[in-house]
Length: 150
Image (cartoon, rainbow, N blue to C red; front, side, top):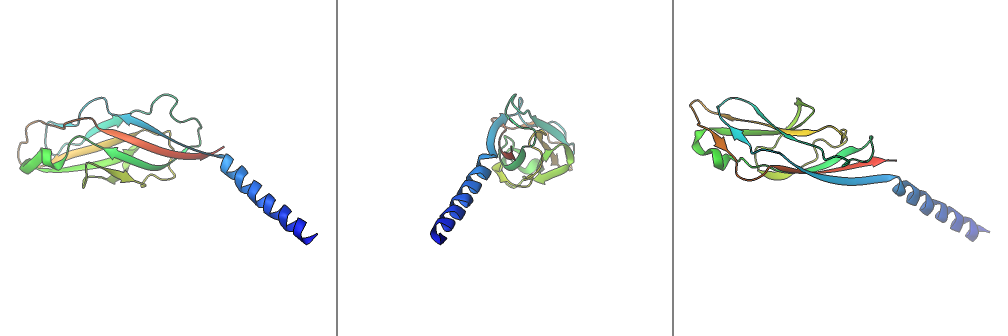
């Protein structure tokens, strides 16, 4: 009887864990900006939006887990004309993390935040002189990972 009870308890634990795992929905989507990063005046903030593809998030309670970013304008493009600051934001410019140190990387800063709110880059070149127009090379893009429970 004791062996049967242990077997039932173990089976219940395994089934319980399996049913919990079945209710987790993990997913990801990729998005890219529809224009290059451009700075036409120093000390002015610019915004580069990343649209959420239609149907990319299947459930309304999805939350972000990790975001991989790759943006097109780097400090090497700016050179001695100034200092580039780049922030990855969600919803508003008060919900941002600084990603200036590398043009590509990943962040978990937004972990637990709603996945249905769009992300954007907020950037500027700080300089005490005219910089001329500076445009990044390539496409800025994100890979967004999320999870939810059904």
